[in-house]
Amino acid sequence: GDSVTQMEGPVTLSEEAFLTINCTYTATGYPSLFWYVQYPGEGLQLLLKATKADDKGSNKGFEATYRKETTSFHLEKGSVQVSDSAVYFCALSPGTASKLTFGTGTRLQVTL
Amino acid sequence: SAVISQKPSRDICQRGTSLTIQCQVDSQVTMMFWYRQQPGQSLTLIATANQGSEATYESGFVIDKFPISRPNLTFSTLTVSNMSPEDSSIYLCSVLQGLYGYTFGSGTRLTVV
Image (tube, rainbow over all chains, first blue to last red; front, side, top):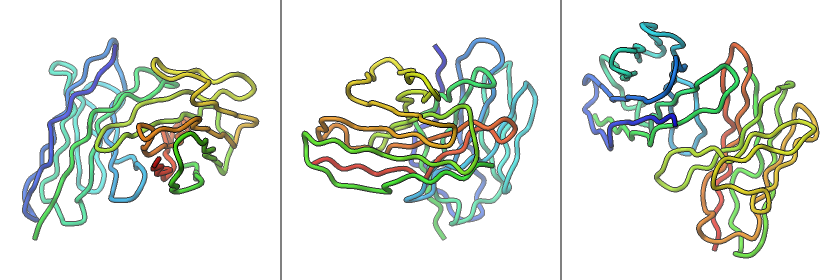
C-alpha cells in the first residue's frame, strides 16, 4: 500500500539556518503530495502541495519539489525563524477524492 | 476554503464512558474524514463519513467502537465508545473541497482516565 517516510526529529536549528526535512514515498501511479504544519496546540494547516512530477510547491518561504525519479518531496527553507517551530507532516493522496496517508511527522525547533 | 468548527476542543473522560465529537462545516462538502493522532505519532484515518449511508472504516477500526453519523453535507459526529486510556488521542475532522484540497478542524484532545 501507499506509505510516506519522513526523517526523524526533532530537528533543532538556529534562527536563519537552512532547513531540509526529507520525505520519500511509495505509491502507485502519480499521487499528489503535500506538506502540512501543526503549530503547538493547533490543528493541521496545509503548507504547500504539488500534484505532478517536477511541480514545485511554495508558501511562506518553504519549498518542495515533486521528484518522481527519486520518489521524494523534501521540504526546504532558506532561513528559518523561531515562529517556524512546529511539527511538519508529509502526506500523499493517490487520487482527487482519496484519503491522505501521512508520514510520522518531524518536529522542528528553532532557537535564537 | 471551508471553515470547520469542531467540538469539544478537549475533554477528560472516565474509562467505560463514551464521547461524541461534532464537526460542523460552513459549506456543503461531499467528502468528510475522521482521523486519530495518538500522542507523539502521525495521523491515522479512522473512516470516511458518507452522507446518507454508513461510514467506510479503515482496517483496524470498527463501527461499534467508533460510530459515525453524517446526517447532511455540513455536519458529522464521531463517537468514541467504551473508552479506555488507549483511546487518549487527538481526533480530527477533515473535509475535501475541490481546488482547496483538504482542510482540517482544530481537533479534539481526549484524555481517558
